[in-house]
Length: 211
Picture 1: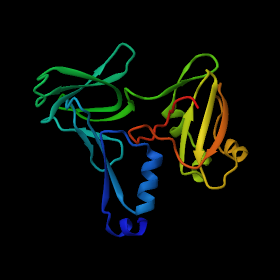
Picture 2 (picture 1 turned 135 degrees about the vertical axis):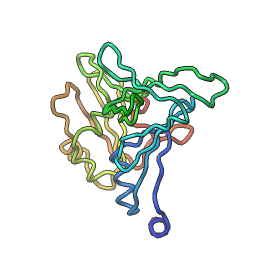
Picture 3 (picture 1 turned 30 degrees about the vertical axis):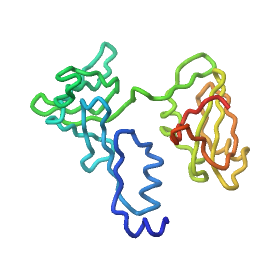
Picture 4 (picture 1 turned 180 degrees about the vertical axis):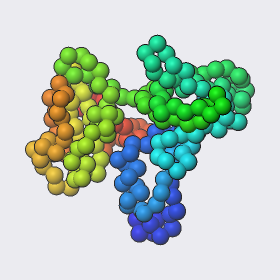
């Protein structure tokens, strides 16, 4: 199947869900293709796509009026006004996505990057401080990614995190050595599994229920 797809596949589109860069790079490397990510959601308020640079989204202002509104903490939130959603027409909708690299042209939002999504998973350290899971797992350099096919985590207690990884032969002691756990008040444990855990609908989530 891989050989067949490599011969015929021209590219891949990521729609709606924000793609983790590690998996995106693996797809491109495996099949020798380029990928394009699109930003969108069910409320149909904002539609934006990449234009050459990864994770920089250019909104289609004819689809919905996209705005970057700054709060008191200097965070920019992505706001959209839908033109075509007849259930709630012309209502300014807060996507609750925090964006960065905000650029305007003639007073209109030209492009942005996602800093933190509304549904981003969080865990807690020993002090009860929230830690963005995406940043911890994918925002650091972990040599572990060179030896595994998939990773998921579970937290049953503040300050403890269980890491599940899919690998044919990597022992758990070695996996711990290859994971960058510096400057984090969390005790990590590792367990090798044969395949990732899936939800009832077939999704493979990063943060899974306590196991």
